[in-house]
Length: 334
Image (cartoon, rainbow, N blue to C red; front, side, top):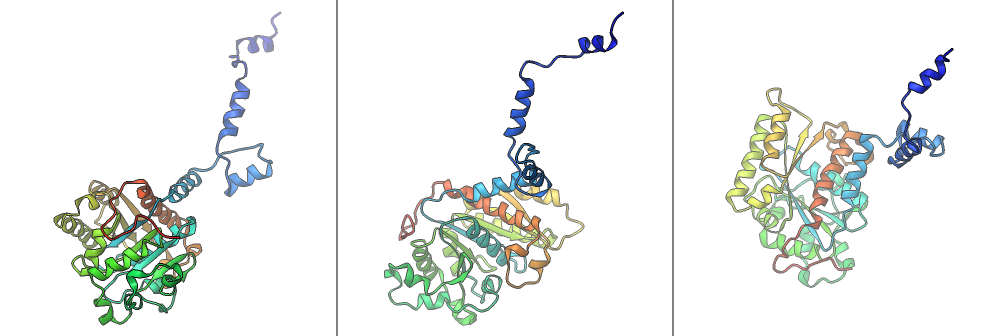
């Protein structure tokens, strides 16, 4: 009589020798999770059960690895727009805070708005005690060799440093192209990353100086008909003035605190991805809409992820080869 159990076992497919060992090795090779339910399971099992990190956690690790890309010398970033109220200053603050949080080198944000910009409000929560005009009034500006001398004119926003604009519009207007270049030439001697929050126009003198010396361009807008049109106008104007390479490598940041129903988000994103290097969407966040000082810990997870994505895209350019403008040093002093 045939044993049915034995017959079933005989017909069952046999696994290759060592397959179970191979399977366990593959599971063990999965990146272990560090947070959430997956991290709890991994920790509770003493590492014997490894469900692997989630896609969101893996994306975050990738962003952080890219943000920490080594930088030899210095890198300048200009945040621009021809339209106000589309997140230019918020983007500058988010980028600066995120880079400073995850890097060991020096990061500074500079308010170059000729109309008494409010970057200090977003980073400090109060008027700045030191301004760019006070720095420019130094007769020995071009001879400063000590970081201590420069530090007297910047404001601390945690690990991020801020060079604020004057709230006196008359003084801010005097911040012209040549003065901007003098200040920038000084900053890159002591800071690795300089982020410029520019004005809403592209023709004012300081903005011209910023574009001539910038290595990464960020153009801000919103997923609305008028704001999207202004992004295109900004890009067209830059191309017309000879900044076509800067446009091709630019990152578009869309502040999605408001949307137009008639605008297809996917089509809009595709349109700008065809013109520039990348598009980042900053989701609506109650903390940002308050308009006060920005704290990264107070942001929603999706907003922090978007800020990290933007910072990673900027850091991707740290390994690119850029010419050193005349009158600038090749790297920060220590």
